Length: 219
Image (cartoon, rainbow, N blue to C red; front, side, top):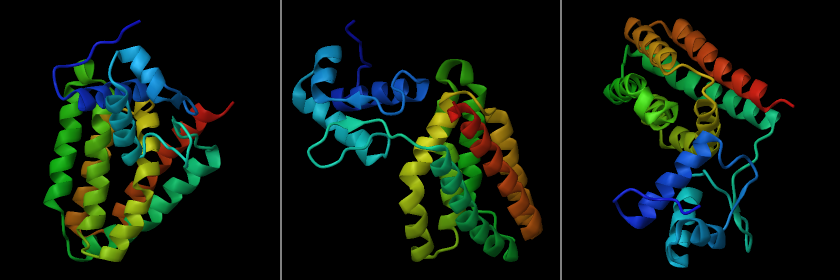
């Protein structure tokens, strides 16, 4: 079957379609994504295939060791739980500082509005449209602290977080409306200066995502 692409840059269009297939489960964990395979499937040049693979590898949606073909990352159940526990430690620390200042980052509120918009257009765009604004919401909370070291620590998790979130939403395990509502609750606790409630809300939010993904990954 020859797949068709949207009328945009060929590399971007190829990367977009691969991303869609990955989120939809057409490219399950561990699947090889080779230049030769993309040349055959999409009838594009090898250089285009290579550039698209490099783009998704840079996003953390594919991984490739030295002299090896790219593949969809395989995350174990313990990987997932550890990633989300680490997120809670870093994001929870950020929430406590923000609550002390009653600071509600405008970038986080804007990102959550995009999550809501993704929920409203879910029939067209699908649940994976919420992944990037969801990530931006959480990253904005960490960035608002203004600590380069904390940001570096969080960025080191971003690729694995993106893979986890893509799998959670790609499997339709979480309601986009629920995600947006829980984000809003966190922002309201920050505005009220209630650090404990903000962190408790974040903990429930992340634990639900983690455990539903663990359920889906369990044999």
